Image (cartoon, rainbow, N blue to C red):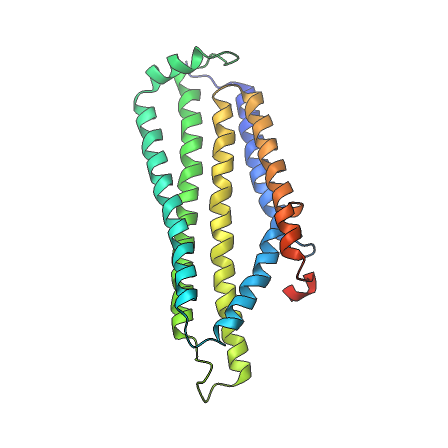
Length: 236
């Protein structure tokens, strides 16, 4: 008979709640207080306005290429991880024996083992889609930079230049935010690994991941340094 441990269900629900809850919190809180994401939005806006002042945009294209390659690296890593998880699903019995020999692990049936692997698989499928979408958006931004009017070009009004810079910056912001969501999923993937030890360890790890992400997004030294030359009103 297939059975599911109630504590495992509670741990999984808690994991989903903290992931979705933190995502909702950061998305709405960044509109009112400084965060890493909102601060980088300011710098991307500055970047795109300065692109229009330059005749030579090789450096800008190089930066965009590096950002796109970062997404490609993590997307490829996600594929490799997914391949490993699928392999583990095929050797579930052997892997269960190895993990059950570890201290503090709970005894469980094949169903729970496969549920844990499936959860981990979903996390990295999510990360793959986020990273590949981020890559495409940086590709869009590269096209925008390539089509940006030159500083010496006639017939382009200041209002048109501002609108172009704003659109390019918004695309870059969307790409950066999507990359950030993909990167967060790696943190949550590490939390899921704790589930193979014990459901309570999974809940603690999920909470710890959110605490780490919160500290870095809202109270890190990197944020203080980035904000030192800006005011939050510049976002608007």
